[in-house]
Image 1 (cartoon, rainbow, N blue to C red):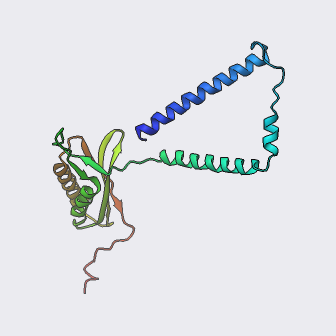
Image 2 (cartoon, one colour):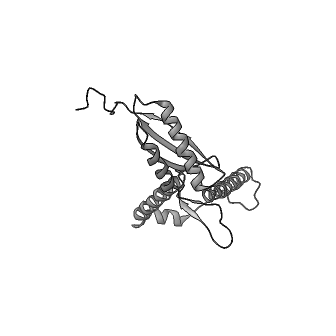
Image 3 (cartoon, rainbow, N blue to C red):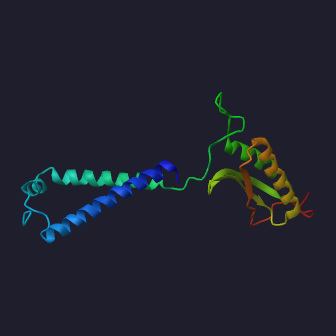
Length: 191
């Protein structure tokens, strides 16, 4: 979750908590006659007048729609967003900022990995995982692929990515996915 969303959540929770504590304390004080000059009963004619007005259903409907939209926006802000769009490269300083498209770098490394025999494709992304940048590769391999060849190629692709990006805090993770059916041609199928 982003820091701004966390800060807004904490402030909103603190305000709501303080308001509930104040309302509860006032209700208890009113109930046990601890508030001087408090009326025995609250009468508000404007509430009964407002609820009987022609505009009341439209106002409550609009208020309900607004609350639903605010709730959806709040939920959308809390969706996990792990992917990183751009990463800052080493060499950035006060004179300028060097950055790279994170997905393009991982895609290029994945294409190198996909050229390995037994690997169908290799997508990936750079994510923020518990405060650390991690390049995730998701190669789909054939069921009969040589795992040692795939492992070696994956290590080379990860090392190439780290060398190209040049960030010491970037690590990589490779999650192999085995395809259901083997698409590699066998000698009896070759014409």
